[in-house]
Length: 205
Image (cartoon, rainbow, N blue to C red; front, side, top):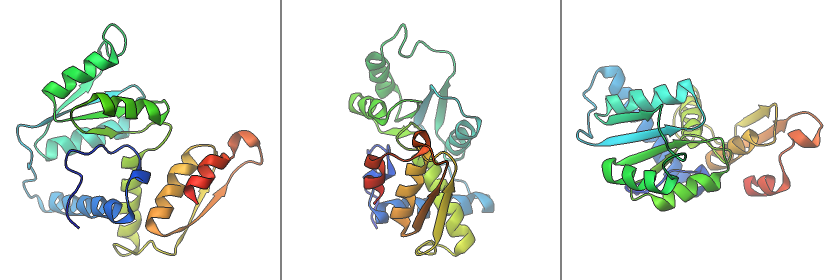
């Protein structure tokens, strides 16, 4: 499959077809294999990305920062800025678009907020987690399962059970299973607060 992600945002895996999703998983497998052999992976010298984490995460930050370093990308992590405070989001994104080649956003807000930022930006926006989806985590989990079970198509027909609070995160894994052709089960407390709402359930179906 030809790469058609150039210049595109990555916000929710439901925006992708199964083939597009698998393309990214295959690319991740290739890059991981190259790193193990010690290959020079610096494909994107003189390009830079910026990460704005309103919702902190040690692992997600380390994953992005290490990947950027491996691929030759400059990486800026905003740990002390006026983003959205003394400087408006609109103005900040305009500046980021002029200085960087991609913007990474992690925010404990609705997905619409990340999509608004993508509309303002002139460069691709990558969602590093919001309430609507965690696409990079879903890609990593898909890669792990395929490594365990034998590569592309190895997930098809297998069963995945999500156990816990099914209100939001369970939806992410429901979409993942749909893209990989897996059967999906949710197990959680018999309490309305912890159930997947009908709209999300319909989306997964």
